[in-house]
Image (cartoon, rainbow, N blue to C red; front, side):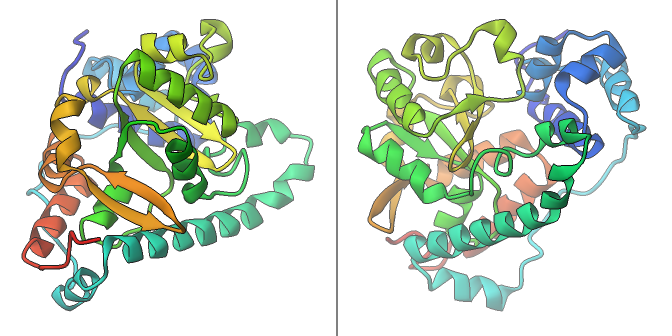
Length: 301
């Protein structure tokens, strides 16, 4: 079984989405397949690339049949007029719009699942997406905690895509962390304020405490629930296309929302990461972002 394969994040994301569609926890999938839960976690987090047979075993246990299809690389389907209008917004304005839509979507999702809470099968609620099972989604509070404790980070994912010119919806916050002892102490303090809990791993068995700086430093990437929504932490050296934090930091772009400074990864670094991850939505983001590149305001605060 190969480790560190650049294809691992793609397979891991497929398995993660299939498992959540099926409403199955990692522990239950481990029972169904005979594959250890920590191994399933490593696959989903991109730390292991499974054989096709093992990957297919997991999907079949979730009720899906894997198929292989050749498809042309994705291009941007965004309307040029719409892109031009988005480019006239500042990064701060785009993030304000994004966060409002995220909060609105969270309220709708909660309204849909609330009737289930009174049923006897409450266990089915335990595997809800991270932004539903803790507290109301509020990404600004996550960034405010990071700012208050002076955590060195670069946000990536959908938040960074919005910063750099494309308004699109998102469900959680993804950040790269400057992986060193001092920064982990600051990060642990911020995670304590956010009442962060690990998900997608058997943390009760592994004994990992996201409020402990040493556990954070010695760990890898983390998927967390917080009282302000989902938060994924990544070590720049542990993801495809990553570069040393100190190399990427000077290229960062900042936005300000409700008085909180939000630091996003630079444009070229974001494009490289998206290309390396290589999912359809990543490649479409690349095409759309490149289409907005000519706007003089697309990266201004």
